[in-house]
Length: 356
Image 1 (spheres, rainbow, N blue to C red):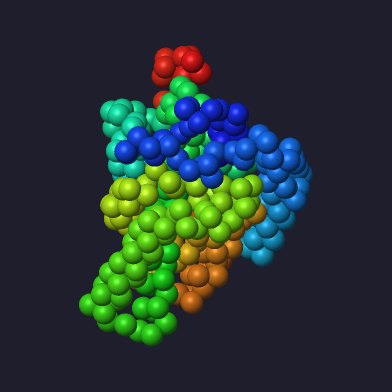
Image 2: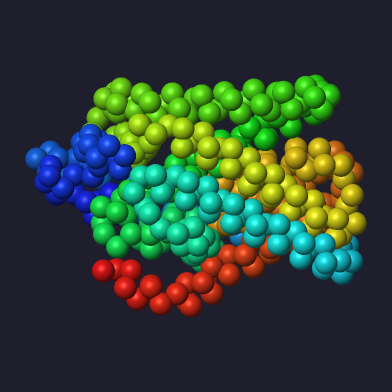
């Protein structure tokens, strides 16, 4: 959320951002470095200009997608798509939509307690709009910027909105890691279902404890980095939750429901092309595929998603063409859900006054 952070530079102490809970100003680390410091320290150094990074992502996406497609037998791939039962795919797409709605509820749970007193329907609309712009823009950060911009009309409010979006992202990734870790360990050691559930609960408790501990010690962590250091600027965005760490714990619990919904979505889609793998196979593969698509090296995870499915479903004797089809059809379901966000944005008259 660099653009939002820079928009607040130069404000006086009286107008400094507050944590949204007790009304106290955030420490200086939460805003830009002092204007009295060297000008070159006002923004973190970039390895590449944005346009070059975007071109590299486009090139990598094309190369990776080309490598995946070059190793497939096209007639078999067409046969897989031709065999699709669209009723299963539609069911999977609806589950994906419901999972994203739950994700919007999670975001509302993080935003409302720190000052964004808006109806739940508003958060759902903003969340879907963010998905749409993430689909259209080269990076998902663009969608996050749109969500912050639409949630608040002021620069200070957008900065605080950026805090809620970052916390939302971290909670989602935490739940994703818990699911991926639990299933990977379970399959590696052949654990029984009760032991796997206990393992998952233990990992979840560990993750929540770490998040709460990190947020509670932010002041100490921030003091360990220079003013313009990237980790300090990143961590400073979590300051609104320093006095409300329980909000993050609840958000992680919501995230477990969201990630489970995505697993069910893929299971239904795969069933539509005749793949009846056990649920454990999908709980083992889908979270890892989702983690792979988070890597900022491919646009919308294209190529990464399909390659990951090929590798992870191979041990279950799933043909590369089938694994690729699962990835493509899951992405198609995500695109349809994201396009609904574009429709929401076009039909929302409030967008004309959101810049006020």
